Length: 171
Image (cartoon, rainbow, N blue to C red; front, side, top):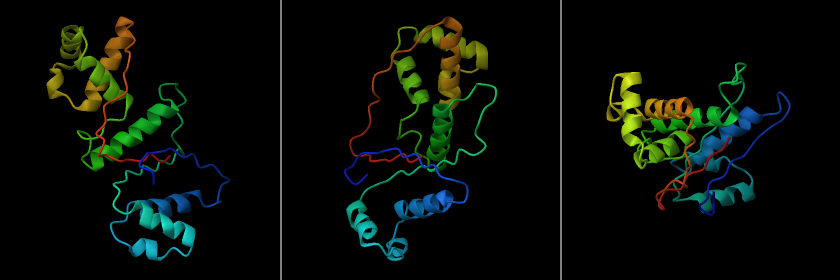
């Protein structure tokens, strides 16, 4: 994060070890818009991060996976993480500025695809609406459904992200 690149972290420990408390404290520090939370930190090493992170725009996402298991095989860990990211993007009204999910990749693939007219017809037949009238998540789900029904496997290029946007994904 300090070097301007995001990263993911997996935290695992026994029940009662303080994982939730640690993540709450970390989230408070990373999202602080003043120095007040950092003033409570006693460690000089941790305090040094306050100075190093100053002026950076961070995008912490803290996900508790308790109760997220899907026993029907429809959700996998990636999908659960992406769903939480999408919720945070919606909460912060960043969905049109930050593109990081598989759904975003599907939409980008669809918009540049020679089958776009066929996919549009499929979307209209399934939803009764045109693609432009749908939210990003619904659109991505319909594109995914089209690919499944047609046996099409999209090929993705890395998403184009603004260089000025720094975000971190913590889970």
